[in-house]
Length: 463
Ligand code: DLL
Image (tube, rainbow, N blue to C red):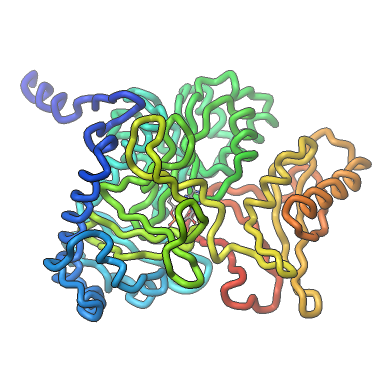
């Protein structure tokens, strides 16, 4: 009995955390040259895996003249055309997997709002890598072994719940696997169990704050200290709101099911961009119109190649996410590049009377107005040949209805002067708009048929 317990203790040994929360300091602070060599080596292995096991990938590689053995460095990959979500849909459900079903340990999917879901598969080794990277991400954000993690990301086909869960366990943290929803119960358990860490979408974190306030519960006085928020765009102003109302430090975590799930990139304590884990992924930033690399520091669409995925090697996947990259070494000492805040998806961009705008840009302007609540929706209509935008936003509780029209005029003025966009603003009663339990729906597109590429319903998924 004693011997068995001793073995079990060895198997679950608490991970050691280095300076600045580095869980894998030898990798996180590796020199750029070492990182490039590791990437080239892993890229060759990834190409070989795709070549041998995925006929569609092999024909792409052959057409590009890219034999895995001939690959010199990561730059050679630029000869290969991009791949997109449509490629996964076309090979639905399992056509791009490099392993037979029996060789998989798990399947996830993101449902989208139209058509077939995007299906992704993981080997046992893939799940281990994912747990390691999520644990690395959490450690960098200040989570420590033994911290109680309240995980309000949805469990199920969505990668958020199980991804954060496995990362927390890998870090040696007990997890409350509460999933999304049942917000009053979430508030009660946050208080009773005393979690130090909250994992949720930013919009759901706000919904939790709001319900707590309505119940007269002060979560600022709870033991919450760290929040890991992601899965949807959120502005700096939204971060301030969440921090003020929940009494924690909020970190941004990024990921997507096609590539892995949460933990592809995460902020460290410097909160100056999200470290993209370059020992497992190759990042490129392209002009979404031309497909060519953008100049250093410019905004573009993130393209990701997996370097260690066994079940689903992804080669030059267009994420549709718009961001900037920072290559300079971060003050924390990590050498992996930083992905700056993802402002939105290419396909969420609205073009209103010639002005290109992401919902998160509008959010940034609205959330700064103290008498408005951070609950809003953008409604797009067709008026004649032009698109028109209406912003629906709630007043803060306690603000007299008589003051709403003036608030609406003020918000309209700031949206016009800061973004250059003319929009009607409707201030609504507190609680008038639906609350999310996962990803918030920010755009209601009421146009008869949206022209391709201008806008689309938000990237969906089981939340
Ligand atoms: O949202 C994975 C995830 C779960 C990430 C939990 C972080 C936390 P999908 O459902 O496949 O996967 O959606 C991926 O969500 O392409 C982005 O458009 C958006 N997204 C994810 N994280 C962020 C973020 C998960 N931190 C899509 N900021 C991505 C902005 C984000 N957008």
